[in-house]
Amino acid sequence: MQKVPDLIACEDCDTIHRRLALGYNEIALCSCCGAELERDMGSHGKRLLPLTIASLFMYIIANAFPIVEMELHGLASRTTLIGTVFSLNAHGMPLIAFLVLTTTILFPLFQLLALIYLIPSISRVGRPPGFNLLVRMIQTLRPWVMVEILLLGVIVAFVKLTNMAAVVPGPALWALGALALLLASVFSFNPRYMRRIALPDGREKTMSANRTARSAEKT
Amino acid sequence: MKTAAKLGLVSCHYCSTVWKDVEAHDCCERCGTKLHRRKPDSLNRTWALVIAACLMYFPANLLPVMITTSFLGEEQQDTIMSGIVYFWVSGSWVLAIIIFIASFLVPLFKLAVMVLLLITVQRHSSWRLIERAKLYRVVELIGRWSMLDVFVVSLLTGLVQIKGFATVQTGAGIAAFAAVVVLTMFASMSFDPRLAWDAARP
Image (cartoon, rainbow over all chains, first blue to last red; front, side, top):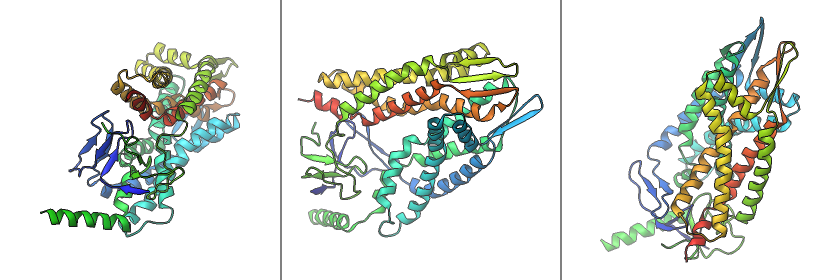
């Protein structure tokens, strides 16, 4: 088994392309089906860690405080995100509770913690323990992080309740909005490129060294 | 156009490194993922998931998703459609349209597109390959948004628990609906769009 470093295959139609050096913010598209092959991450790698840490703070606020409070006939009721999960579980819907728990609480937290663990170690030589597994899990779980959909869901539920009771948005609602925006920015970074930045592993280094030597000979 | 498969190359699904001379059961040396020329057993798995999702689509739309008990002991059962109608009648047209798209059109569109993609691949059709590739990318992008209704019902259940005045309970319909969303997400993940091009290329 041998590596072919100069080529890239389109994920949607399997057409082989030569890997091009991308300029700032350039995107390489497949000439056959138009799918994205590669994207230049430019300075995005540098912004990633502060964005992730900011997301983590917003995540904590969004989970610690009530999302919505309502008042009906002098009786108040409020709920946090985790409270919703417990309530679903108590009402005989453990599977839905599990779905809400994973997509809005556990997976986002995992993504943020894994990124915070991986990003600082990228610039150092070598990979941190568990690098491959964590990057693969980040990639696999990404479609299952549904914070932005939850935000829209909160807004819909909010409007629905205004028709029957007095509702006040809780601090977590604002944090949730900020979290959704921050995560959109964090997620525009494809974890696949972490491998590119991460790894001058021995073999790759010699290969690129050979290539530069050869091109130097030509000139 | 040269494809990786014709040149005897395999591209890693996770890190996109291209390998040559790959033997069965080899793993990517760069990231450790098992290498496959195509997603394993893609058509069968996708068909199974799509059929399961189609079956769940009926209870998801027919059974109540939310049961509201008001303070007089009146019980009101809402299906997904009646929830949309409620928003429309009460004047929140924007929300009615958003929920109509996310909960009704998107799942239906997804199922129709997946069936279309599967059938065209199996018939070795070369009909509108680029448009089909685009359809697949759209389905992968919008599928998650159907979870909207699951979150709305969950939040209302969590919040509206004022004993004696108003309580909201989840109905069986929401479980079926969540199953449709999750199954169609898995279906679009297990479908390998390269099969369409394989079937069409001589």
